[in-house]
Image (cartoon, rainbow, N blue to C red; front, side, top):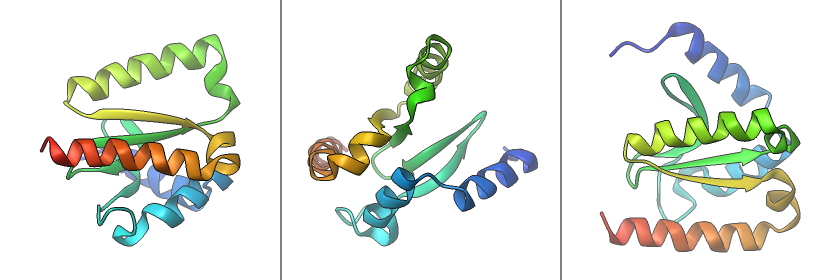
Amino acid sequence: MKLDTQLLEFAKSMRHNATDAENLMWQFLRAKRFMNLKFRRQHVIKPYIVDFYCHEIGLVIELDGSQHNTEDGKEYDAERTQFLEALGLKVLRYWNSDVLGKTEAVLEDLWEICFSLKENK
């Protein structure tokens, strides 16, 4: 299946305009630094672009800012999560504020989930 060129270009631009939380998380996930898992950032899973994706364990990580706490944001996220889960993916969501202010707790939670997913593969 050919990916939409515009979607790929938009994902590329998003990598260059990452939030502080995305940049911090990427420092932990990039280059197989986290549990020797390969993560991609701003990865296209048509029709969406997910913040982080690990194909090996079927994991999507989304980092959410305040716009996700609105009614529209919650509805959109629920539809998006349902779509991704229908593909057999596990979707994790962390608040930007938690990634920045409770980094250790986020990484511990992520480690436990990745460990569990690896064990079940």
